[in-house]
Image (cartoon, rainbow, N blue to C red; front, side, top):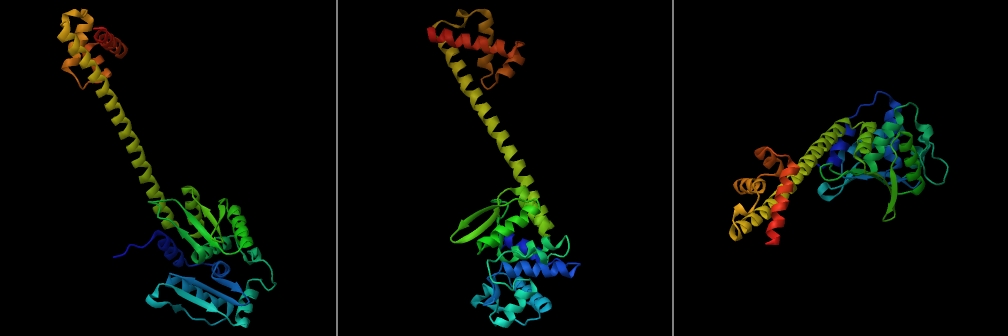
Length: 297
């Protein structure tokens, strides 16, 4: 069984929203229309890999614009298209959303009748041109917009919602995007995908715990390696003194530490301090002295 992508999961969640106010549902349609495949007097339509999006687009066009249209599936049903090409139908839709005048395409904010309309509009925009990465792999949400001025007005709208996106150009398309996990979570919440937002937050928490555990493990490994390296140096020095002069060559305080080190090769300086009753710096000073004596020999 093929696992559903996180992007499709978010879109399916947005499709399940039932809006209390018709103005919000109309704003959802407006977002789908203006960010769809085409939105002009020559053609109004959408192309998507999600059949549910195409069906919703069709039903809302009929409900709010009084035009009839059909969902056409590609071979193997890999994409679904709803396209109106009759000029009268296209102009009717443009008029509904206040786009009778020709000119650069940008968001007509007068379509938002209540405080929640902008949220529904963003949900519609995401259904038409949005994608989001699997948070287990990467944090990235973007809108792919065909027109520059339209992308600029989207940036303005998102900024007014207190989520500031970044913008770039990729292969002739204007990309409005987020890469910060918290901002993406805010965007999901605003659009109405709260379940996906909570799932993303859980993934982020698990990632953070794993990263902390890895840092701790790496730190412990480094400390172990440091202890082993130091212990090896100490033991080599002690063995050299033992072979050439005998341990009685050392003063009693150094001899005691040397014997303790031989008996506890894996002990850290802190462990050696506990065993000897000395301070950690005291043990370290005696071991360094032993290493110096061995070098002099």
